[in-house]
Image (cartoon, each protein chain N blue to C red):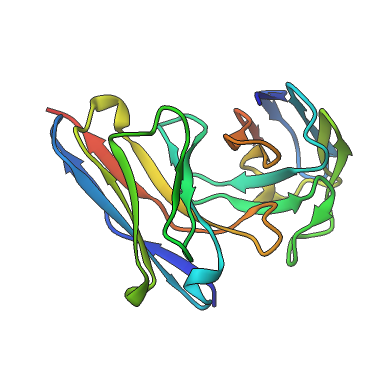
Length: 105
Length: 119
């Protein structure tokens, strides 16, 4: 299953609302996770099962969607949110990741 | 706390082998499947496969059979990734990542091991 993300990069300001989309080449129900990765670090899970916020993740992050179309929304961008975001499908082997969306200033 | 700690960076010549370790702590090692993922420089993620830490049974993604071998030493709660006949295109950061309790996400991840292959 191929995942595409849009946009591939975006520039935003602190306080902006940011939306990233992830589209699957076939239906994956809600088996989708979102990760945040900062340079030189391992990814950190933000959202799983498409819309469930991981414990400890700020509530400004939210996820939605099912089937083939998903979104990650950051309601009010904070300085620590500048990073690259990846979606991952866990419905079908091989597990696959989207190409990433880089969010910078 | 639950964590995965990987071995350090490696610099290898083409044709050599490398073995990356991933030591788990803070949880029962044999309860959760462990995944291997790589990220080439400036690129996205490729899932190499997983290993059932209870049975030791590995599952490899297409393209990662033969030269890539997953193994375990449950006595020290450690998983291993061995890559033989290294090629320059194997240059990447290799991560281990634990399945979640629900199996629907990876958490935690190891810190990553850079394997560089160059003559």
